[in-house]
Length: 286
Image 1 (spheres, rainbow, N blue to C red):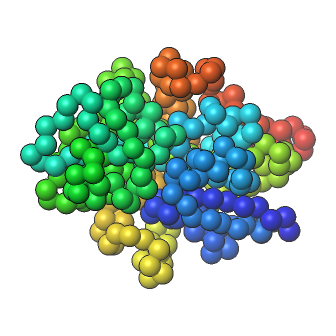
Image 2 (image 1 turned 180 degrees about the vertical axis):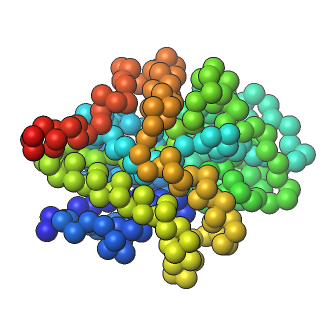
């Protein structure tokens, strides 16, 4: 069996969507080896072409499109929700406020930088952002992953990234946050088969949540309690994570368009042009 390296973040939705592979429920043709790393580390390693398959921020993808294909599955979008810009309740933010973000190539960083061009940004591991705000290291911070569900009572939400996204996009589109990318150097037949394994894994996870979620809790793989885990998975690892739909592609394309128009990308790309051509398998077998 071929060895395939897969990297994902340690947040609940990525772990949940990958565990069907980890437990051997899918993928008999490949030996999958996984690594769990924070999202900015994953983005940086994707720029170095480190893993065969990697979770990435959608905002990173135009920078790695020549080396990685975009996968149709294991995706996380906001739909009426998303990352939150938080501050202390008594803090008034100036136009050049100091803020902690989870990484330069994250989707929330792209949207934030367009909305707040004068803000002074530092980058921290997403688990350290709340404390940085509480300790007055920064004036504000953008919370992601499970951190959006609960934070210190001395903090409040200054802005919802979902609202900023709607303002920038000027239409009601899902907010692209996290996706998956596959190394283009893999043979096409392997790329197609691996994507099919991952689609099946996410589908199995979603429809067997009542079995899988307690298994994750028992193994101490999750940072939240059972109730918050269920809520979080409903937000970011749901039926729309199994395989992307047209509205999600439109959301990704809008993100790429915003990034291009504000000088973050050298060229404008369309998401569907960078998918794995799975129709090759049907053609080959016809």
